[in-house]
Length: 203
Image 1: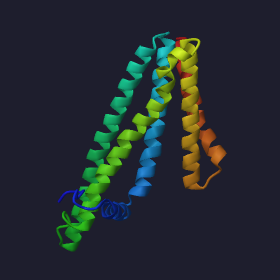
Image 2: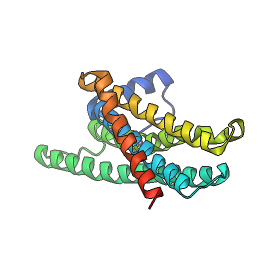
Image 3: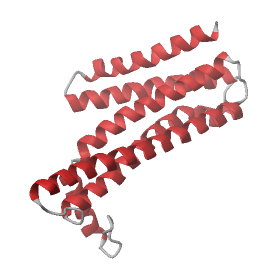
């Protein structure tokens, strides 16, 4: 049975989607995947930028090509890996529950909600690192407006640190911790990545 039913009016489809989200507990899992993979995406692209800086790459086109290729690879990896993992885990859980209740749950509401969750979580897992990394690369699309390529590098790294801080605040809000302190914790990871990149550039 399909996950989405095209003939349903949008309002009814939206209600069904919300119901499936509640049944499959997509909200909590989706938030966790979003934060974790966006964090990975930002740090990964920071590594790419530091590598280009260390190699003294002065062409915005090269930086964008390597960066965008990395974004796509992370997106595909997240989408594919999450889909296969979630699909296997949820199928196992559904089969175990079916064995306990002596019921075939494949076409039940729980089964449909489980398949819906797999698709939604895979999309979140694929898009979050892709979009986070792409955000960091935006200054290189406007590299011609900067006095030099170095300004584009510095601006991108600044955007990356701001994105990390925002993710920290997001996580702090979820865990009800001090938002500023939570943001500082994630920024420290970015600063560490920059320092290691600088050290490697001098090796």
